[in-house]
Image 1 (cartoon, one colour):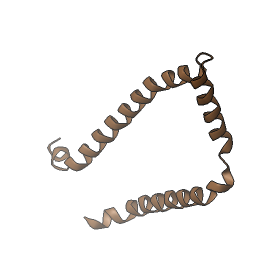
Image 2 (image 1 turned 90 degrees about the vertical axis):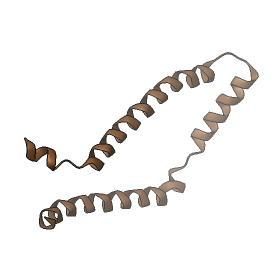
Image 3 (image 1 turned 120 degrees about the vertical axis):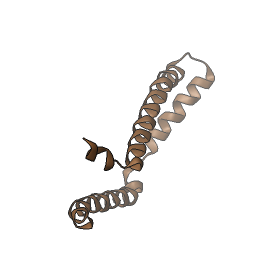
Length: 97
């Protein structure tokens, strides 16, 4: 039991707590604001609401995958590099001790 406390890395604990806290915070904020935005977009027949709905629809329809594919390939490459580093870490870490 004492050995487990001596091997404790405080940075690792801080990083995990911070990651979990930020994820929960982002989910709560998004879940609170999404119904309000949907209410604004679905709302009455006023001129502003119609313009906002048309704008959002035009932006959604204007998204073309052809314009984004280089960025998507870049992100996929970075994810592959990340997984490669994590896999290599598993093999290198035992030799570091």
